[in-house]
Image (cartoon, rainbow, N blue to C red; front, side):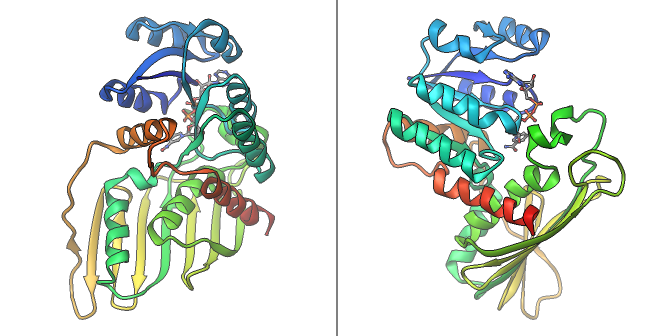
Length: 315
Ligand SMILES: NC(=O)c1ccc[n+]([C@@H]2O[C@H](COP(=O)([O-])OP(=O)(O)OC[C@H]3O[C@@H](n4cnc5c(N)ncnc54)[C@H](O)[C@@H]3O)[C@@H](O)[C@H]2O)c1
């Protein structure tokens, strides 16, 4: 049994709570958030204690692991705190704001002999698993290019303020959704960047993070990737993989369509739905903690995502 505390009970936390409840090998033992009405309400609903300061957890609760759902600027200090207190850490994506922060986090895991993993979720979506199987099967020939277009209103009043504060978020839509795009590219193709360049701009407000961006990446298997993010209106989420013998189209994370040379129409690819991406993620993290073979993303992978994002910002 792995006893979990969840630190940060905002938008993403409910997915982790449901996954912990669904897995017999997991138990939720504590919650923490600065927002007392939020965390108190959840604590009463779930019957577990809550804390306002995460530093109070190790002395007061017996817990094996924490899930950190915090603003990106807190990923490093909170991870190091728990690792130094002998507690395994699953931290939400992106791993941290800089590669130096990633290195400091892994150093804390190493010196304490504790496990650190990063919640890059893309490999746990059924669609991405199937895309990877199609790529690896060679049925469409050689993969050449990846193209993602995502237009979503990034500046809705409902978005927590820290997301558009560069110190806390590390960046805007490129840091947040770019972490997902690089995760998907790395996982499905197995490739890593040889170069990354980008244009990042903000045309609608004075926030210190970008509102739209185009990122161009050359990959070490000869593929290239163009990722287009617009943060101004929620109208598009499409992904294309081009091959020598056809193409795949994804509607976000819900459907896959295939078209081969000579075919007129796209055909939906049927796929089996598994237990859900968050259950898959927490299950793999538990295996990792228990020293069993696991596909949970490791430090090298997650650091490579931050390295690519940093190169996009610095180009
Ligand atoms: N995997 C995914 O698909 C996915 C989706 C959404 C968010 N995320 C990631 O999850 C993380 C959290 O995002 P979110 O959307 O839940 O944000 P959120 O703002 O909704 O939640 C963050 C919570 O952290 C709390 N908090 C801030 N500072 C704290 C501190 N010092 N101690 C305790 N609590 C503190 C806030 O009060 C808030 O409730 C980010 O890394 C984000 O990128 C991942």
